[in-house]
Amino acid sequence: MAENRLTRYELELMDVLWKLEQGTVQDVCDKLARNLAYTTVMTTLNLLAARKNVLSREKQGRAFVYRPIVSRDEVCRAVMGDLKAVLFGNRMSSLVLNLIAEDEANETDAAILRDALRKLEENQG
Image (cartoon, rainbow, N blue to C red):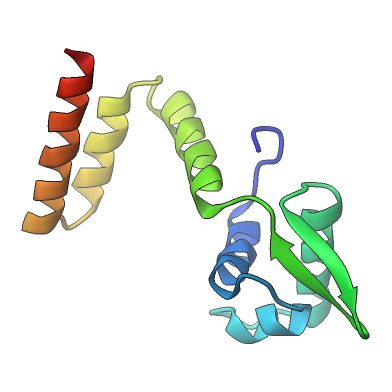
């Protein structure tokens, strides 16, 4: 995944396919939050399959069916790793603190974070 960085637009298409688990160009167009030309979506899905190797593509009838071959978690880890390295000097605390500052965390979020910190401390000790 490291050599196959995805753009925000590519991530939008991947999000649709992760939710659908598989789909044609038309399926993706129908589920996108914004209107994009069919040919634009088709070209990008072909790129994601042929060059970036994050989708598989199989002919079914007259259409190709696309399936993600990388998980949302794999892509998320790669993107977060890039953010941490490039914007936060590889400092996890800076990354997390910036995420918290931008989000409207609630008590449930706080409890999850406390639990994650407790587990991190247990594993370090």
